[in-house]
Structures are given as C-alpha cells and as structure tokens.
Figure 1 (cartoon, rainbow over the protein chains, first blue to last red):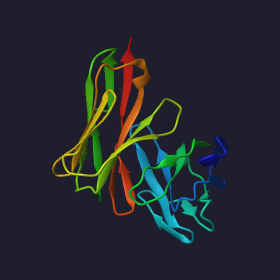
Figure 2: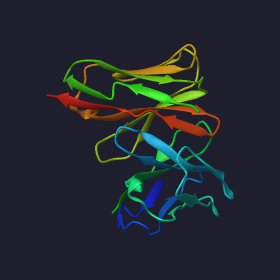
Figure 3: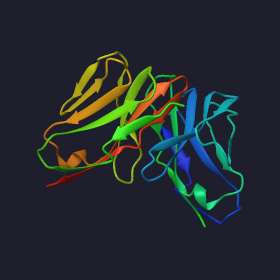
Figure 4: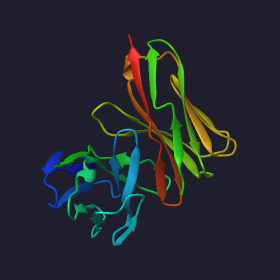
Length: 112
Length: 109
C-alpha cells in the first residue's frame, strides 16, 4: 500500500493563480482532512470529509474548496492564491472518527 | 472553539537528560493523540489516550491523560539524538482534531 500520497511536492504560484493540490489514499479510509502547517502555529484544519460526497469546513477554510467524489481522492483547490497561503499542506486520512491520522508527505506551496 | 495549547514551544536537551512537554485544552476531550514530526517530514502517529487518568508507555516515552481529560503530557527519559523533532498533541472532539503548536526538540550530544 502506498498509504497517503500528495502531489505536487513543491509548487510556486503567482498571486491570483489557481491550482489543485491532489491527495489520494489506498487504505479505504472514510475520513480525510486537509491541514496547513505554519511556523509556530501547528497544524490547522482547512476542510475535512467523513465520506464520499460529504465535506465540511475546518478552522481556516477561506480561500479553499474541496470535493470528495470518491473514497480515495480528496483534492484541495486554491481559488485565487494569496501570499498568506504560503505554507506546507498536509492531507491525512483515518479509518474512523477517533482513529490515528495517516499523513501524506506534504506539499510545500509558495505564493509570490 | 476548542483550543489546544502546548508548552514549551522549544526544548533544548542534553543527550541523556529527561524532559516533559505539556498539552492543555480549553474543553473536555474525547481522546488525545500524540504525533512526532521529524525535520522535513510529516507527522507520524505515536499514541492515543482515551480514558481519564490513562498512562501509556512506549520504551522511553511516557504519555499521560489528565483526570479531567483536559490535559496531557509526554515525558521522555534519557533523551537520544533520535528524539529530535517536533512533538504535537491533538485533542479530538466531534469530527475534528485540534493540534497544539508543537514542542520542537533539539538534542546536544
């Protein structure tokens, strides 16, 4: 099993550009989440999904969209990139509500 | 909303010494999880505590969950260079995990 995969690993955008961060898991997990990690602020939840077709907002959802058309995939879309979105983005999945989170390797995004 | 505070933010430890990192929540948690992130890596699950007053050990690591299920601690004995990294606690309530800001550990050989 590959676990949780994320692409790309690195990305540089210009302000105003849009892009999609990809996340996939092959563990048949129902729960998937997107976090951003900034220095001194830990991991902050952007959006999460409790199953295909169901998504909800986390702590910092503004400027991001998600969809969950399949159990395996949970893409994160930046609608109009801003320098404040420069961060490391982690996707995570888990089999149940109270189970351990499996994190992907992360995407390091820089917005100029 | 739920907030999880973690202290200290940085811990510089002499190899062989012990240290403790603390995690405090503003609300009662259903469970608390601990993760370790090596430099340049991603968070990796260490352990989950569910019961009030629970204590679990993993070799040199001891995890505790407070009686009120609002705080937790991670104690590492005889620190080694392999312990370098950032340790995060994450408190769970409803469908969400709230992560602390982490304790970044450096080790002096």
